[in-house]
Length: 369
Image 1 (cartoon, rainbow, N blue to C red):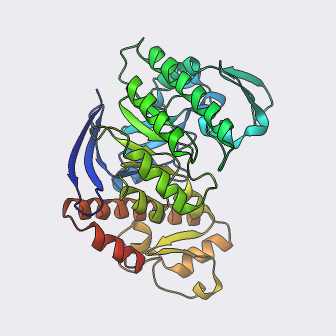
Image 2 (cartoon, one colour):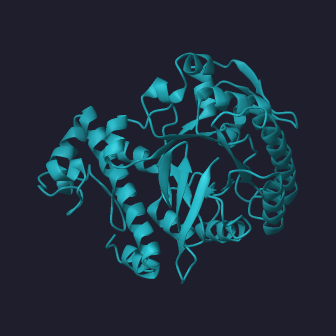
Image 3 (cartoon, one colour):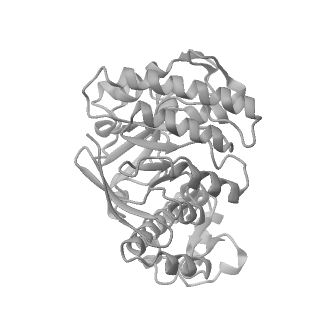
């Protein structure tokens, strides 16, 4: 079984610190999960991730189903043997790709028909198919197929998507129960920005019963404050003794504000994608390392940062690497951004345990963290 233990709630906001134990791997929460869409966090090796105390990464079942194919991963002993990653691995089902690659798909109550964005080949996947695919991939935590709607979708469409998501969740659970493997299934709450739909969705998913609960369909274009409001409203409807996962959210500010609203788990491509575009995380925001003002700057990206990049290289050198398109530049900025995120989460967790979250929040907005 998945084991989640709530250690502390802060007295001001109710932010949670806990421990999630998945197949022998202990994951301290709140936790940020770096994204490895194709079973690799871009530019980094497992050893580099271990050195930054990354204990769980996220891959995408939709993309892995298309490349390299489930048969290959399965034949090589599952995703852990295939990649050399020996810590926890979570797979998203591809529900977000239903949303983001809308031009390639058709949804009905049975499942999703889509054309591969790679070669145009046709595929049809049911919720049961997706559970079987994720099991064969060998993920520790799997997400069921769901329907993610765009921001501010009309109420009737959001309700229809919620009904399909609920039906698919029940079917996914039934398929999951057919096996006794060490894969754990989370449920996803949809409902767009409508509180009555979110409430109905949370009640339905909790009634079915899952190892953890995810809040999906947010941070897809709605106003930031509305995203915070709906997140907090939904989190309050979920069991206190289970992990709560806000899907696709990963900026430090958004993580901070939604941890304050009771969320435990996060993922986003933001830190790695930004790194490859020369945008590096610093207290209070980001800087572009390609800025001409850094041409002869001997300072590290962030003063006092203990990551490999900041301990060894100057802004001037990293800027030079980007200007000459040297791969090392992308690696160094990615190392820094992932280190920053892990350190941010560690300090945030410590502030919860010490009941100093309000101080942490003030320091963040004063650009000290």
